[in-house]
Length: 287
Ligand code: PMP
Image 1 (cartoon, rainbow, N blue to C red):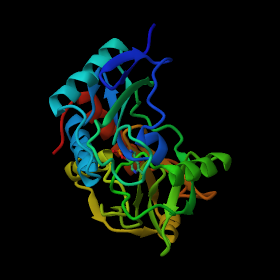
Image 2 (cartoon, rainbow, N blue to C red):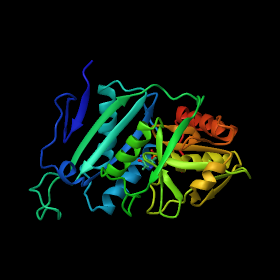
Image 3 (cartoon, protein in one colour):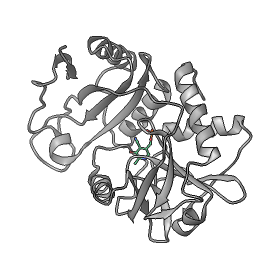
C-alpha cells in the first residue's frame, strides 16, 4: 500500500518526500511540532494539541502555514490516504526556506508544513510489566514549554537510557528535582497516596496527556499536587509513571536500577492507565 506524507501543499509518496536544504528547521532547528494519537480513526485530544501548536508558533513568531480548519482537513485527508485507524500523526512547522542567517528572514517567507503518520498497535488498558527509567542531568534551555524540533538533549538522554536498558530518561535539574522525561511527563505517587507531578512552567512541556489525566484523576477523587519532586523522593515513592501521547500512562517500576515500591506495577498507575485508555476509546474531550 502506498504511504503518503504531506509536504507544503502536496500529498507525496513517503519515500520521495523531501524539504529544501535551506529549510530553517533543517539548518537551525527553527521550527515546532506536535504528535497526536489516533484511535479508531479519531484524533485524541485534537483541540488541545492544535492549541499548543498555536502557542508554540506564536512564542516563536512563526505564522500559521495554513488556516486552522485547513490543517484539520489535511490531517484527516492524510489519515484517509494512509488508512490510519490506530497510531499517530506528526506535524511540523518550520519558519521556512531562506538564505542561511541566524536572524529571521528579512523578507517574509512561507512557513513549511510537513505531516506524516505512523501505524501503531492499539493501546491496551493493561499496563504490562512497567518500564525502567535512567536519570540524566537536564541540560536543556530555559523554554522547554515550547515544543520545538530542537531536541538534541532529549535525543542524548533517550539514547543513554536505551543503552542502559531503560525505556525512558528522567531529566534532573541542578537542585536534584526531576523535571520530566525525554519525551514524557513524570509523575509519582507518595506514601500518603498523593499524586505529584511538576507544575507547568518554562521548565517542562505542558503535556496534553498530563492535562487530560489531571481531570481523570480528579474524577477518581485522587489527591493531586502540582509541585517539583526530587529524585530522592521518587526513589522512595510508592509508584511512579510517565505520560505522553505515545506512551499513554506507563508505570515506572525502576529508577536507576532501584525498584519503585515493590518493583511491580501499582494500583494507581494501573487504574489511571485504564481510565486514560477508556477515555481515548470514548472519543470524549476534556477541557
Ligand atoms: N515532555 C516532553 C519533553 C515531550 O516531548 C512530550 C511528548 N510530546 C511530553 C512531555 C508529553 O506531552 P504529550 O502528553 O502532549 O504527548
